[in-house]
Length: 127
Image (cartoon, rainbow, N blue to C red; front, top):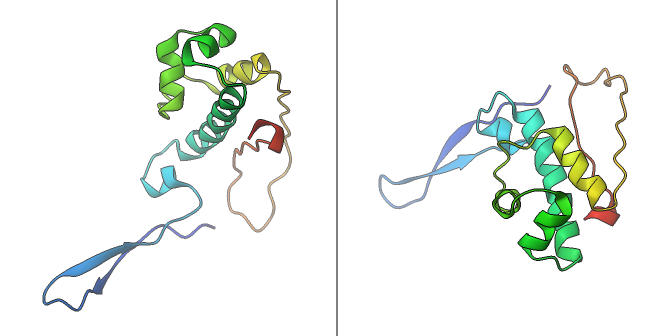
């Protein structure tokens, strides 16, 4: 089971001031206390791959929007990491439009982990 992030304090050696140090985990969304952290991290990984593919092709946002079948402001939202309004299925369609296969693998969780997770793995071709 993943240890919850915790805040500790350390003296800076300058009077009463203290420096805050945060222990972080593997999922920044979980560290921020988001209840949908697992899905958000998976979406963020997919969006990172989409952004890389768009950049690798040298596409402007308007050209990328046309290729993906969306409006240019939606491409801007992707580039800014604004994930609201983008379902996993929609992101899969974007990857397909960019010439990428999307494979979904379902497997048992390891005994070492208390809960099952959702992960996105973007291979080197899409990075």
